[in-house]
Length: 353
Ligand code: OGA
Ligand code: NI
Image (cartoon, rainbow, N blue to C red; front, side, top):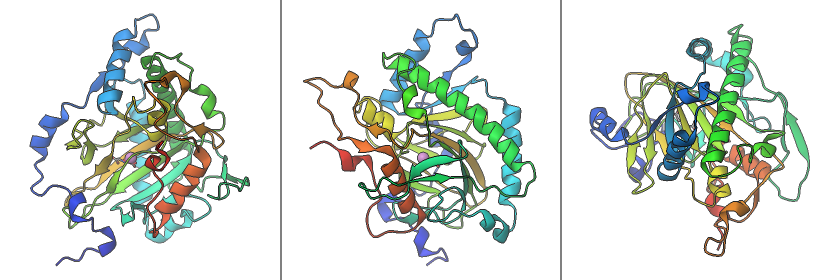
């Protein structure tokens, strides 16, 4: 058949559609909302229309793009340049900052999503250097571990530019969290207390051209585990979102000037399924490499995630049981690292009976 390593081959039902015609897809993709944030520049403007749009997008899609977000596009270009330089280094050099079973940050080229290998290479770093996480996945084990980021020596400006970008994207993420909170009818700072010791991290993804894009995926179908994700991408395209109403895969039209915002598992649980954390995946192609940069806004390890009382009533009982964020994070990292016998941890495992 083909020369593709079988670790990358998706089960037939998860393979991207054959004869993938991007042009048709992008007509559909108009349905994923684009929200203009320019009114945020004026502190006195009325935000009601904006938060209504956000509420609608979070309920129907769990995904939207934002434009006029205020993050410097020049800074975005600078980080893209240094990241591309890093990925073009020889493999031995990149592996000097390789992730391992203790520290999930750094370079990795063997990530698995649902036990199938992804067609990508990545570099991850925590926002807070250092970040405290549980030492093991064992529920009774209370030992903690402080992790620091492994930084490459080359490119020489890599660390500085990445950290500058991370601070800016973090600001945008907290701004969006405030808007999302208001969109739920809650005070703007309702969620702030969950981030005192945040475990957020930034990821750089490089998806190389793939000889068999009909068999493999850049990232297999998954939902993001955290609170929200703020993703920047280039102009190549490949991200697909499962539509909440019918599960159909919809391609996101790439806009390098916009950020893609998506709801993660914690927000879905907090809102007791009002807001949706959509499955998504990345398709690859034979000719063009693609870069993307998701920022995963994650709570402090000690936070227990459960439906908030504001979303519970007699008619609307909690859809999830409580789980600890740090242990969920630790379990997820272990299963991403290599192929395991069992299914990786999902919020469905905490569904109320
Ligand atoms: C992810 C992800 C999408 C993309 O890294 O979790 O969904 O477009 N990435 O790279
Ligand atoms: Ni994702």
